[in-house]
Length: 67
Image (cartoon, rainbow, N blue to C red; front, side, top):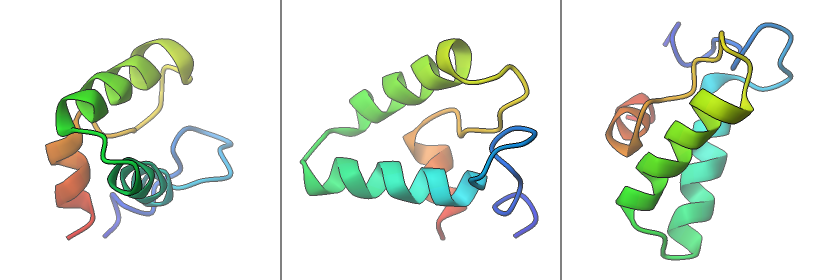
């Protein structure tokens, strides 16, 4: 549970869990496959978010966070 309530990055308004749930829900609603989710998480983590972010590495890691 501690992992889920971590800030996405220092100073972020969202937690790791909130961002993961929002993105995975959006993908489910629009029928986006898991491979796209993996690639998008990678793009966000490595290129768009601050270096100290804790966004899940892939769909599987995100899914385990929501259980």
